[in-house]
Image 1: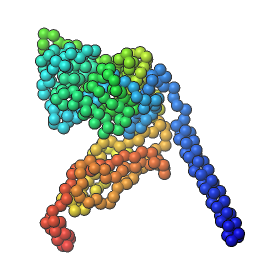
Image 2 (image 1 turned 30 degrees about the vertical axis):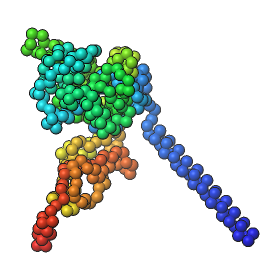
Image 3 (image 1 turned 90 degrees about the horizontal axis):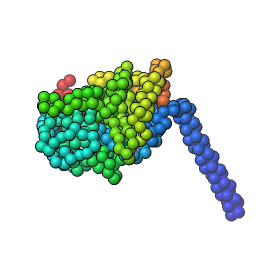
Image 4 (image 1 turned 45 degrees about the vertical axis):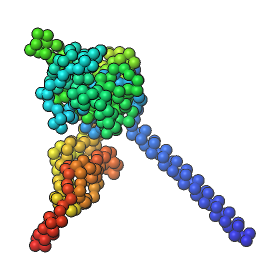
Amino acid sequence: MKKITVAMLVISMLLMNLTIVQAHANEAKMELQEEAIESNSGTAPALAENALSAIVIDAESGTVIFEKDSHQKLPPASITKIMTMLLVMEAVDQGKLKLTDMVSTSERAASMGGSQIFLEVGEQMTVEDMLKGVAMASGNDASVALAEKLAGTEEQFVTMMNERALELGMKNTHFMNSNGLPVENHYSSAYDIALLSKELMKYDLIRSFTGKYQDYLRKDSEKPFWLVNTNKLVRFYDGADGIKTGYTSEAKFCLAASATRDGMRVIAVVMGAPSTKVRNAEVSQMLDYSFAQYMNYPIIKKGDVIGTLEIEKGMENKVDLVAPQNFSILVRRGSNTDQIHYVLDMDESMKAPIVKDQPIGKLIVYQDDQMVKEYELLAPQTIERSTWWKLLKRSTRSLFH
């Protein structure tokens, strides 16, 4: 009995030592991974030193180039209107609104203070002109008028704003109005605003507004209204085409900016800067750094066929997967790109029914053996389950081929 007890003690001690060794091994492995990440990132550049929060991203791949406290919840002021513009653009794209539709100004919309295009109660403008008023003059009144046009009430529009924020992964955002005027529980983060800006800048039309320095509203009336873009970078920074400025005494000076050079679009956001001059300078510096240090390496062009989805028991046997966008990765200028390649990670076949935009796999980009980027692939269309009669005909036909 004593021998058995001693043996059990020895085994227990060995197991404990093995557990401790494994724990140290896991800890060491984790430290090595952290060291690898730090050594690859290099020394962080001295950017946006005066802003409370900042971020700069590559718009195509979504890669973060630089960030400073980018998930901090802060009042966004008028850069709130990026969401207002996005919802309107999506409604136009989906056919729910037309740019030529007339928007009537309610008493509530006309009563908005702050920056405005001085809408009068009952005044009508097209959706397009209202969008100009928001994008260029940061019109609080135009924002509310558009919100009411699309959702019936601004309150219902705010519900739409928050729902869309969740869909975009904006985890540190909550909206209370459509224009960013100060109110409790209205906040966002630089990271979330970058996500939102990336989505908005997919629309060519909105860039024609956000990137224009001056224009007119009520041009043919007795009182034409001169629009001057509140974002001065669109005039003074090469390649700038947006997006939105913001200021309140609580939020300080905010800016979400977009610029394109050599086919590469970069989005930079600062929040809580102490002045307009500092805000513009720090955003310009982040853009300069991004263009000087990085470039897009194209993987697949929009419209290219990247694979075929085989469908079991569907109304169609297979569907070509066409790239809905450009797929690229961000690389440092001068780096070796010879070993960059991609693989499709998806089932060889899927059973119907399949719903449009249903996740069906991933496109994974590697450099040598290291994964550098992963894109989710979505079903390009809805495929209904086939009828038994069609399946029978298809089976019969296959017997003779």
